Structures are given as C-alpha cells and as structure tokens.
Length: 354
Ligand SMILES: [Cu+2]
Image 1 (cartoon, rainbow, N blue to C red):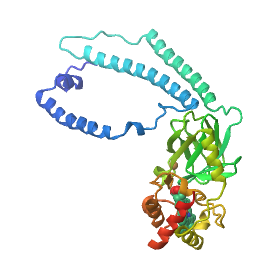
Image 2: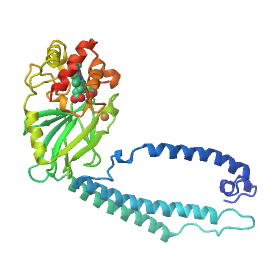
Image 3: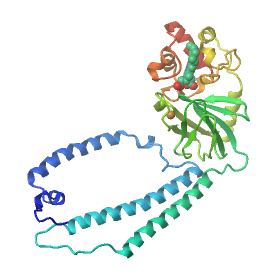
Image 4: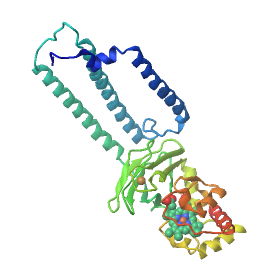
C-alpha cells in the first residue's frame, strides 16, 4: 500500500537498514552485554548432565530421536525458506523513491502448491508418528513388569513377579524390555526419562503402560513432567540399569529384610517404633507397615533421599529427618522436632537399612 503522505523515515525496514550512528551504538551497548551474559552462563551448564531425547540409550529412544530429527530437519528447511523469503522481499522490494512495485493479485498455482505441499508433509509426519508410536509401545515377549505408583512427590516401584517394593530408584536389567504400568495415588503426574523412553502420564485409576529396553548399564535421570503441586520440581527419577547378574543380585538383596540393627542403629530402631514413623513407612522384618510414605526396607542403599533432593549420606539423612519441609518444601512428611540424639540414632538406623 502506497500512501501519498508516506514518510519514508518511519518505515521500520528503512530504520533498521539505515541506522544512524547513535542508534547503532546504543544497540551495541545493549546487545554486547547480553551476549556476554549468555556466554558466561552457558558453559556453566555441564553438557554431559543434560539428559535429552537426542542422546537415546534404548531402541525406543532411538525411534523417538529419529522421528524428532526428521521433523526438526523439515521444520528447519521450512523456517529458513520462509524467513529467507521474508527478509529477501523486505530488502529487495523495500520502498525506494521513484520505484513502483509490480501490481498483481493472487496466483492460483502458488496457492495450490503451498496448500498441497504442507498437507503432504503432514501426512508423511502423521504416518511416521503412528509407526513410531507402534514401535515404542511393543512390549515384546516376557517383559519385566513394574507397577509405578506416583505420589506427591515421590515414586513407588512395585515388582509383582519378584514381590518387592522400592522407591524413587528403578533398577532394571539391560537387554530386557521393561513394561511399566503407571498409575497415581493422587493427582496426575508424568513419568519421563528422556534417554530411555517417551513421556507417559500417571493418572489416578486409569493405568497407562510405558515400555523401554535399556541397552547399556548406567544411571538414567528423569523427573515428573506434569506439574503436580509444590514438590513437583523435586520429584526426580533414577533408572539404574544393571547387567543381568548385578540386577539379580540386587533383587535377591532387596527381597531379604536388612540385617538387624546393632549399636546406635538399634537405638534408632527403638525410636522409629515409638515415633509415628511406622504409620507411614514399611520396613520389612519389623512391625512397621505404613504405606503413605516410601518403603524404607532398604533405604540405606538408595543413592538419594526424598526423590533426589539430597545425596544419601548420614549427615543429609539427619538433615532430612530434622525437618523434611526445610529440605523439600511441601513434602508430605512432617517435622517431628526430634532431639539431636534422636536424629543421630534414627539416621544411623536408616543408613543401616541396606
Ligand atoms: Cu509432578
């Protein structure tokens, strides 16, 4: 649209390309420090710690990454094409004194082309997506079944065939397909370990399954990925993939109650049974059989406390027991105002549960 009173200097494009010195300097003053800030921040993010679906460690993860790359490459080509055309047209056909742009309206051929091409692309993406969805949900023969119960804000893992229960750290054998049956006891959560599998919701009363086959021993990190309340950010997942023999050894150890506590730890056990702890926690081989909190039968052998909020060390165990809410805001375990002596004994008992 050409307006007779058109004032060329108000044209944004012109402004951008004909920056006067002062504006250019001011822009440099803003962008320079911004770039410096970005450069200063990013190296601090340890790249090895970024868990991403682009670094798959299972056939299901491979299938998802392949689809992901395919879509991203197509999107990148379209992005560069469209942005390139916009920038080219803005520059090449910008308003210049004495030049009148060619006047035409519409082009049927172009309209048809850019309706059909995206539709075809979408059909291709749809077909590949359906294929990938089938690939990643194929449990194969004899999968290892684990029932996952999501709680605000921790994970319960039940192995029905082994008859064992644990929390927050999912042990699996490499090479065997694992079939998770995800459910929630309260609100909607979502189970996501990006290197191993896609993201599947854990709903109350409506189980979904998620399948993956870890290829290499290692610890794969994940977290709840559906906002579920105050503690959501600290609802982490560790999948510990082990060789079949290491896994079998873990299963055997996990099936037995921990060795009876001695010394300070047995004092801790006495306190545990006096305090309300057993209303919420189960410890196999003792009277404690509560289910509101994680099973503590082998809590001493877990890598972390509170679904990943603290490393599992005696000092951190005391910190947790002293006031869980100070460590993990919102945690559904109260502060029992324990004395330092009680804390030390209880922590010793917890750490003895291996
Ligand atoms: Cu959550």
